Image (cartoon, rainbow, N blue to C red; front, side):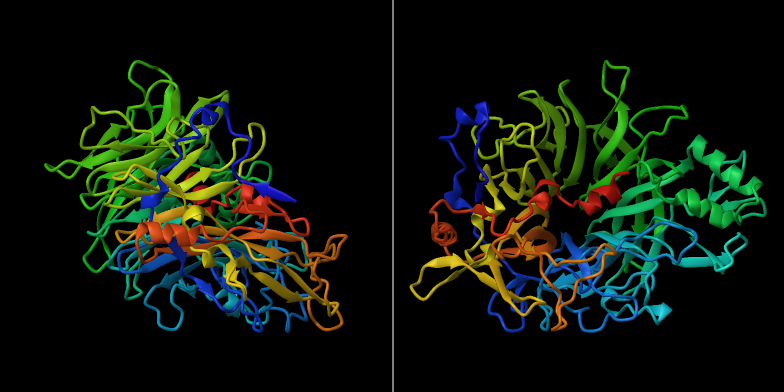
Length: 638
């Protein structure tokens, strides 16, 4: 059974289908982190885009020096029991059940998010993941339940890196313990953290610096601040570092004050005697089991922190103004998400559109005032029927990229736009994607370089009421070209290889089952998001890689065969059931002329002659294709 990406075109698209993108000038890209380690005895190449013993990898940012930062998420539960995990912990051939991470003050805190880097110039592992410790974390591949010092309690997220190699993101504190005073006789400690989200920077020499929010200590009936005192409670505060520029200026957002309901929660902790105060605060810092939101909430504001020239200390910090004047106790938010070399910050803020009394949440940019260093807020102007907009990035010439929401053919869609901040009186520009008129394909940009090249993701089908698969895109403003990244990959990067007759065919991946049977399936790689692009056109993002699924029991443990290998799930024909896992991906422009490169990339098609189809062999699951695992979105945008 085959699934073609471009079927069931919308009415809008039907009228313009003849004017497809001008692909001839597009560069062809090669996936650079393909490594011959898919199986020790196989010639097939695997996309190695995450750390060992983690499930998912996400490429976050790349600098001009060929270095990137990324995030690994989700621990693999590969053991058959707590006492016997040797022999299977390194198996990477299939999809194992994810280890469930619980939020509880009664159990030790186990981290589930890890930071790694990849470099073009790493001679041993070019572009392959290398664990990068932050706040004392250990490599997840070295975790040993018998050695507590190897178990991470710190969650780490990388979001940006500049050309000097200074990396920024957010992290939690390490686990703390307090003597247990409850009724469970088997429990010795309570478990808590001093903070749940704090921005940080780490320079190329390895020096780490925390980026403090203005509100970390709370006192009843007083303003939240950073000064300790006898009557004050450490609430940790909230800050995130989202981007850093060439002058070591960092932007992000920070909690400036607690919400009124959160103050009431902290007051109850101080006045109660069920838990120690720090433990009680931690209990409220965890997500609500019903809706996933945190019980302790802050008023968030866009923020900048200036690091010194070595990136090892903070020399100044500034709060950026909200887009509206208010004394209301309602929680309003502003966030800095990208910035350029001049210190102009792009993001979003609550505000009131001109002529309206209702509050909107829209794309904003903030410009530094040369007189006193203060920042001035600017709304990105949008017409009335375009709402809930956001700006993700801005280049040195002032080209801002973002997205807004709009009803198209009766459905709410996100649409990519760009805006010239040097001409504030101008209008936003909505590029046509694959057609010469507005389509109903949802799209979001994530990064823009100084050449006007933009990467992000776009929907690839026109189904109305169903989830839509997504693909990474590359837009070139100067050439006015919009490309699906999967359409401009080399054949090898798509999972093809030449057979003995010189024809391109899908790589067959063979895996040995716990029953002793050798199973096979087609290799398949789909780039689903471009997250960052540097001046040389190198792109990092996320790709989905097809993998077979392991069998596991009702307790989430692998089912192991007599030969010591896991048993794969198969369909009625004995073919492996397959699904997709996200991996960090690095794309580099290929050599040769544009025409030669385009012909090379499109010389490989499936046996039905249609090309770029999803072939469902052994009941492949497409759940990942319909829901981008945008970890960074959930972390950045509360």
